[in-house]
Length: 133
Image (cartoon, rainbow, N blue to C red; front, top):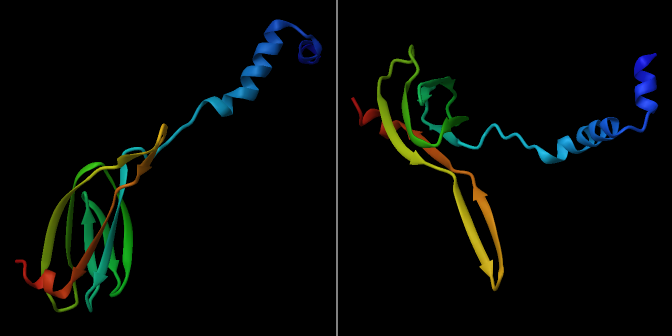
């Protein structure tokens, strides 16, 4: 087989290909959540609610329950209202600015940085839903 002959040869090309294949996982990193912030919607009502976080729906959040949503860094808009069919009406809206932060700490000449992931807890209550049109 031609590939077996190539693999047994100790040529510079083969050495470079093997070295590249071995080192590739250590030299690259992929992060899918660099600009993602977490938003936790907590339902503290006696009814089911619908919530929207940056127009992403989270439907029928049970009383006492919560959902974890993801949004982009920046201004996050949120809206909640009672789920239909329960005989109650009310809604509330809120916007917050969320961004990941980098903290730097130094102890003498020894410095380190830590990225702190932004998160926000939004508690929806019966009072907050009834006070809005």
